[in-house]
Length: 230
Image (cartoon, rainbow, N blue to C red):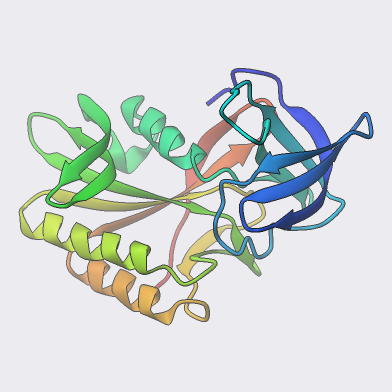
């Protein structure tokens, strides 16, 4: 995924009210950017760190910028939670994720019962529902999810179990938007119930596929699959 317009560089002053961040641009102008990430953003917040923003030309928007990434620990971390869905869609469509190759139809936002999954894919042999999660939290060399308690995330896992029970392939895809980690795990200390639900889903046949994205101010692309532990 290439950014359609050049990003604007600055440094983070502070994030507040979950969805807002004050940023000082390189010309010393201070602007308020929209933060799409509603989580705690533990381990990816550092005041004074370089950031990049997307300018937004929408008269209905109160904020004229969207916060895309932050530079911490020698690399860029993608914090825009709307990006992983697009990354996953493009990668599955283009056959760039080894375990999700071979689908001739790939769609976004498809309903199953009273739920809606991020991606639906099919070919002549099978159907597949994929739920996508953005991962930015780091513990040692582990990428962990979630960074805050998520009842919604547990609901998605329960629905993936139902998908599998219907004889349809069910996949939980974690997109890790940072390069300083090399293994994925559930954040048991933050949300032990989510960790239990993930193990339950895995035992029920739901596949777990963590992938790592390479993040830069020009583009974000899925780079490789990561191993995981439960």
